[in-house]
Amino acid sequence: MTLPLQPLGITMGDPAGIGPEIIALALGRQLNGMRRIVFGCPHVVRRAVGVVGLDLSVREIDEVSQAQFAPDTIEVLVTSSFTQLPSFGEIASNCGQAAFDALVASIKCAIADQISGIVTAPIHKEALSAAGIGYPGHTEILADYSGSTSVAMLLGNDLIRTVLVTTHCSLLDAIKAADFDAQMAAIRFAHEGATALGYRNPRVAVAGLNPHAGEGGIFGREEIEIISPAIEAARREGINVSGPWPGDTVFMQARQGHFDIVVAQYHDQGLIPVKYMGLENGVNITLGLPFVRTSPDHGTAFDIAGKGIADPASLETTFEYASRLVAAKQKEVA
Image (cartoon, rainbow, N blue to C red; front, side, top):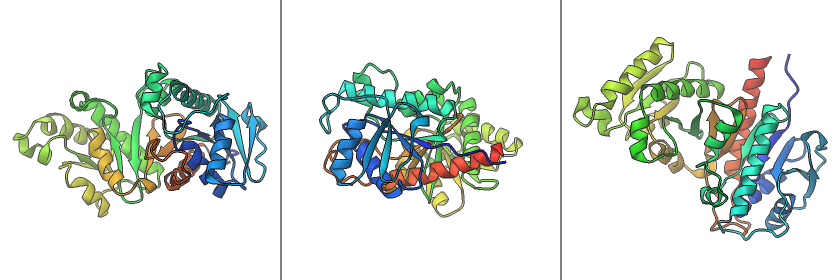
């Protein structure tokens, strides 16, 4: 039996960035018949509706159960309320706090099964820091507040997908952190994530850490001593995984259809090829959470915030991926 589908939650992101604008634009195209709830400040959302020139109403609610989903109406669950709207494109502690509060509220609702998943608009790391919030980004907040002990980032588009062994840390720390256990976790997450996206027996490729995947130990021994043993162990678990492949060609092979998903060793190794294919189609998925979470593959774009020219395409793609993942979870429960 399929369980009733709860509404999808959307966090407004940093109020000084393009998050509220792209939410208004995306919802303006999808509102009627879709069950969406924005977590954030209603005044910020109203301003965003005006910036993009849409004829939409904003309705304030205090609980998910109060949502009515009337035509041409954005439901906003109030998690902050600015008495003076923040300036566009400026780092501010109150914006960082408001973005954080919206995310934490959405996590609580997701854990309570009041919403089917979370789509997060971009936050600004410096604004979080200015607010005294000691997290480097969404992923770490989501993991901590959901009680998840192991999570991973899956970044992708229609052509290539990647899961990261390490995320937001220096390259030196990433090399230290990319140990056997981290390799195994990333390979498993890549298999599970690709499966959830509809790939049967997904072909997982693991990128090497060193140039030419170490060239048989000439350029480093991490591939021999850490990465290859993890690949072999994952194969024994039944995962269709291969590598380590040179990082400078493995994504090209994935784009050509040889692999369904790539395990990248560090942040930029995985994100550069995905983002090079176009931010408008990129999506970020957090694996390992007890609920679905997706986000656009771009930042707050302070330079164009408030100008009404932000493109909602990536957010719309994010909605599509969230729906696919929620449907997959529904099948698991049924």
